[in-house]
Every structure is written in structure tokens, then in C-alpha cells.
Image (tube, rainbow, N blue to C red):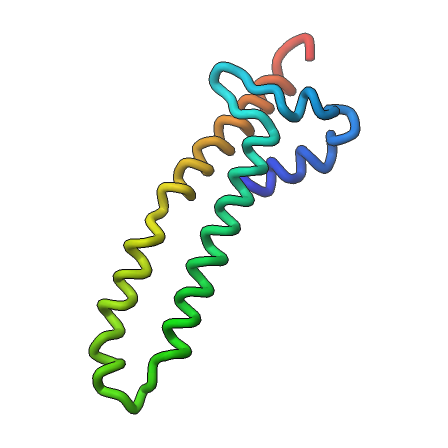
Length: 109
């Protein structure tokens, strides 16, 4: 998955060059798009983590009102961070990795 994209890039960055990193196929995103997707996922989880952490830091266990409001506050955070970006990126990465496997394993490559 994601580790495979980064490993492929690290192994072949010099030989690929910029043009190859930006080239996309009809069914496959470019390496640059796959890496950008990984950054989007990382940013998604970082924001989700920070907002969740902030919520928990603001809650006082001694406050009944805070404790009662916690489930609704948690749900609002989860609603804001739907996993569409994660699912879209995982699809891009799987298409990219599958395409790279086909290219590496096809006869004549």
C-alpha cells in the first residue's frame, strides 16, 4: 500500500526522473498524485488527532455538563472528518501499485 509507494519512489527516484513521476496512465495516477494523496491522508489524521486531543483537554471529569456533552462533541468531530479522503487515496495507491507491478512483471520490461 502506502509504504510500497514510498519504497518504490525511494528506490527508483533517480532513474524515474521528473517526467516519469508526473506521468499518469488511463487507469493509474502518477507517482506525484499517489504521494500527494499520502500527504492528504497524513494531514487528515493529524487534524483529526489534534481536534480530538483538544476536545479531551478541554473536558473536565469533574463537570457533569462536560461529560454529558462529550458524546455529541465527539460525533461532531467524526462528522467533520469523514473518511472519503482516505478511501480515495487508498484507491489511488492500490491502482498505482498494481500498475507498477504489471509494468515490472510484464514480459519485455
